[in-house]
Length: 125
Image (cartoon, rainbow, N blue to C red; front, top):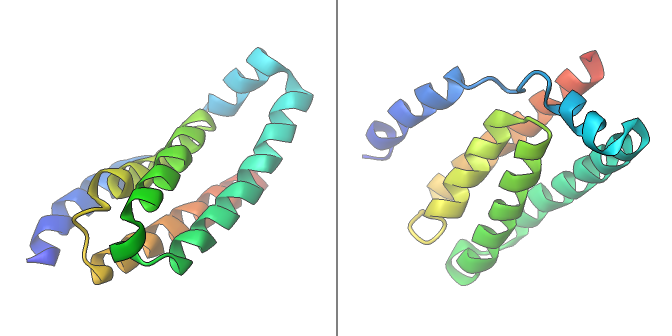
């Protein structure tokens, strides 16, 4: 049942670009290059910490905290144009109460991969 319900959603997610072109440039126009660079550095640091935090929290005991952290991640990833990471964070935010442990682990693996892709694209750009 898990694969049947996730496979179409995963296919749609894979069709999402990992990075929205121009998002960072728009942020630079709004707050300046130095400010954008500074908040991007904070984004990388906080996102790495947040992804590690998810792995330490029990889904059964902390689904509310997980949903709140996912909401924050969704917002900031969207600000920088990391569409795939934002979409995965939204999925976690909306489903934290209903996920099983295996589904949660799979979703975290996808989020880690999206984060790694975003970092790699950042290094290329």
